[in-house]
Length: 354
Image (cartoon, rainbow, N blue to C red; front, side):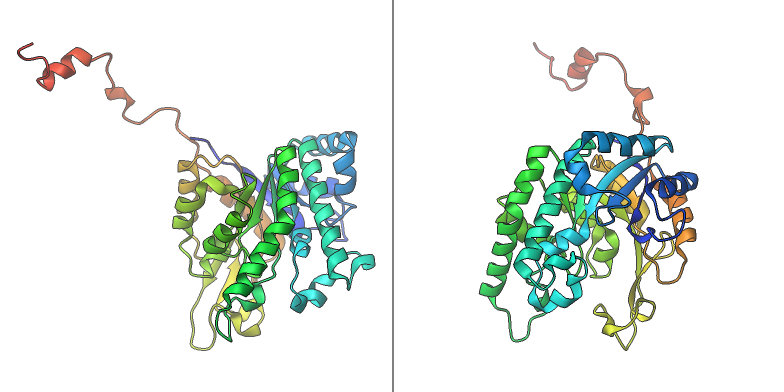
């Protein structure tokens, strides 16, 4: 068994315009002071990390790694959550997602998707140049507007949506395979890959591609009432990245899992800082350790109540406290004796009458 690596922190929610959050060096110094050992870095802030330059320049990647090393840090994964989302966008979401793309491709679904595919492919090369083994992203969504269909279920619509998703992602997965990097889709409502069944459907479309894997985030499973511990039992061989994010579901008589278009603080299901919600992290860390998860435990902070600085500080301590140092021997090794073959055969009565 392997000891999980951590704590890591996803920078996306912390990047800002004020020091220390406006530069990679500032963020690194801040994170290291809190006890983090790795950064998960988004690719949509070129002043923090330039994925285009990282894809073509080993020197740039070495400089980034050197800067982080000065603070005792490494990169856990790069993230293209927003770019991955833009690979497949249903027209109903065009306006909402256009702002994630550069101005020259907005309003053009085809050009926006091509731009996103190119960015994610750059992340494959950048990950390889940085010596990374996993990459975090979203799948995008063509079928999501119909997740609870009325009029009734249209099998052909879902079949074509997933077939198209597979066509768009297949060459991208091949690119990551050439670079030796796993693509880890965050299983997330709003994405076509939002539970185990939809992941399996997509996996079939890409012919069980070895680079098609999972970013495990229990908060999104808990708020769908999915057994997230059994999810690990089922999909552990495909779980290559892990977000430590807590959540709680507090049922009431007015709204449920869909949220009623309310702000997060008023929803029945909402995200919390690690330890403040209902997620069984002891069970999760035990399961991942049992199944030899080789990746990082990375804080993704999203809480509707607690401020981010407190969440980040507590998150490092929380993850460190939950990492299980794997034993190098069994607790009952003391009872093991030498070669007992002859005495065991005698004990079992196997040599009598020989």
